[in-house]
Length: 192
Length: 192
Image (cartoon, rainbow over all chains, first blue to last red; front, side, top):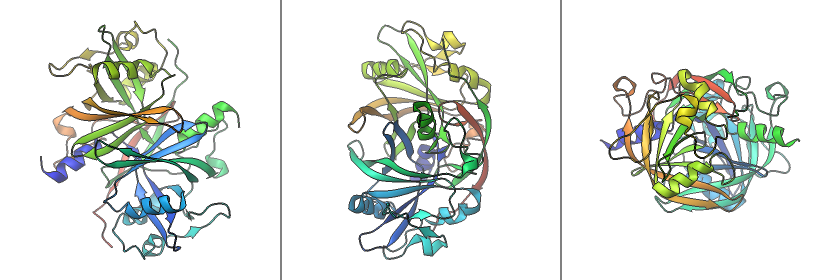
């Protein structure tokens, strides 16, 4: 199999994944946005979220900023900002902020170093908990502790869950393909 | 926030995730199926897929079987098998196979120890590459190397990617909520 075909196959094997913009800021104050789909729940108490990165890709600025500042945000992508979010995967020079390059707005919370995406509806900030080296292929698993969550009132269920339909959150696969989602079932806790 | 609300919030924060049935077999020959949504691409060459587990949940049989046999399958869930897949999250006794408990069919490939789900359309087998201890909360990241992939011809794109719409693969969130997906865009490789 050719390399690109192999990448397409491997990245679509897991199925539909989240798509979020990771917001960071460098020590010199330059903000950065990068799309990530390898975002996984690791725990609820404390709330831990992990994501996978490689040192040699467009994610490299994200990783460096996280190591330097121990702070990042995850911002859900919806349809109205899809093209801009995808454009953030381009390899801009380190001195260029993707916010200005793709035309999105950043804002800061007084307690959080990393920038949020104004246009995103579901967003949360994390502080660095651990960076785990994955020996099998030299990737890194970045684990963060949730510090702050911003969700519109109408996207929060009474049971505590986020209504991903109401927020318009998308799913993705293969780094280039995007899906809208439709709720088809909410099933009860299963017992034998 | 109450514990259950906190779990709902934490598990919905990442957004729409994959939903697969993990197929394993114990050393005594009892097959096991468990739904997992924490499934992440770690690399394309070699093809590595990771998933997160806790030692103290229903996943415990899955983890034990993987440690013992170093083999498991991931089977995409589609609408026709959703209720059965969800039912596999119930805590059956260790001597009960979820295949018979929920009424799904298993089959074996001569080169693979773990069982496949006959009814699933996209399925693949993995061999154990590494189990990484996550110190932050004592979870474990199980990393597998893809050994064998079964995809219907009409669900494979010429570019190598899997057509998740054609296969009817679902997405999920919060352990109880399931989504169908609709492709809304496939965007070109982004350049500055």
